[in-house]
Image (cartoon, rainbow, N blue to C red; front, side):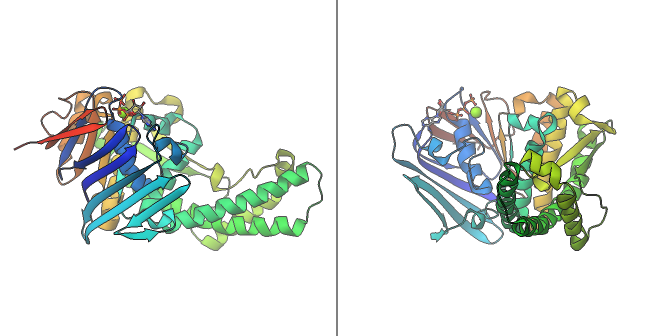
Length: 369
Ligand code: ATP
Ligand code: MG
């Protein structure tokens, strides 16, 4: 998959831009606050369905402007594609190849990219929501049906938790309704659980391999999906029954908490380096290696599933890596498209095919002959 062009209007500090990318290594280079990450944010929005750093789309509108519009042109093994995204007032519009698309789920999975940015270090040391979010975004790109299962799950969860709140306050509630939501939740939970387990298995194989390579065989990486349900089975019916069981057996606790305490929205991935839990023991450098391994593995899983590489977006991470890891990353760029941001023009150690100078939301490209 190759990103050919990114265009934006009234997006963050960009009034208007059209940036053409090389199929190889692209470096967006400029001082702080000039508009490098804004480009990465705009591109990744098409893969993730929303910004990776804004809470609301309205934050993306250039100060004092009415709305913003973004588009990308890309090519994959099926040919050329174009995606558009705009927001004016409350009206959001998404288009694929000129045709309007209603749901965000119809956009995700068209343009596949992997983002690695400094905040990703919290994947190791941060709370479970960081790791769940990694899984959710990564799986959505590979299996768009995941989005529907997970959003239906969350709807059922909201309904069920609302009833638990009523019960907590001693309000009259139809117990049958609670049972019915528990059953619906358990059903969707079983799909989400299985898709996560399946994905984690795939990504583990790749990430372990990469971690070995970047640590010269000294560090072995492994993952474990952490859930409160007790089963080794991959049978969906069995998993659904396990969720049902845990939801009914813990009802008293849940009523006094007024929330649903069990289910995929509470689950986690445990990460181990040489058998020790990374959350408690990993050094800064090891955390970077883990995240780098997971991100490159995310790309490898996409490659395996679709037969072509995603676009790799590296926002401000090269300077955080030591020379050995930086070299590993750059020398692995063959056959892949990288879009890298950095304040340092020499960051790409001669690997850059296209250098884009970024100044105040304006972009000037120069290509290596
Ligand atoms: P750094 O090297 O520090 O990461 P950067 O080049 O990645 O910098 P960006 O995050 O892209 O910088 O932000 C560029 C500028 O965009 C900042 O000055 C920021 O204040 C500005 N900005 C953010 N949101 C908006 C907005 N909605 N409208 C106008 N400008 C904005
Ligand atoms: Mg930045």
